[in-house]
Length: 103
Image (cartoon, rainbow, N blue to C red):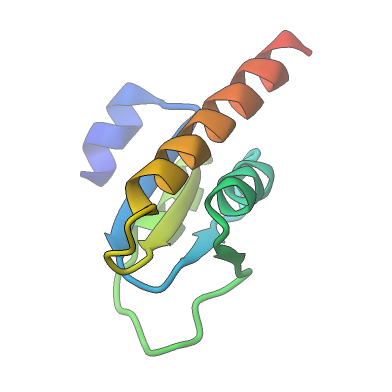
């Protein structure tokens, strides 16, 4: 997956997980700003670093080696508005990417 993302050279990579209602960016590019836009639109908590349990090998952090902005999204549990909030969050990230490209 790491090599495939390197080949694609995306503006941002978003990894979805279950569940904790939080967003964790890496340190590359606009990751923090894009993750913040996602978190705000979804109503999720933005965290700087994962501290809940030890992780060995994390795609999000490995993408720093490629200078690729990335963030993990820990989805909320099955609340009735989860899909709509995450769709709004993805649209917020697309808008932020488009606005950054216009600069």
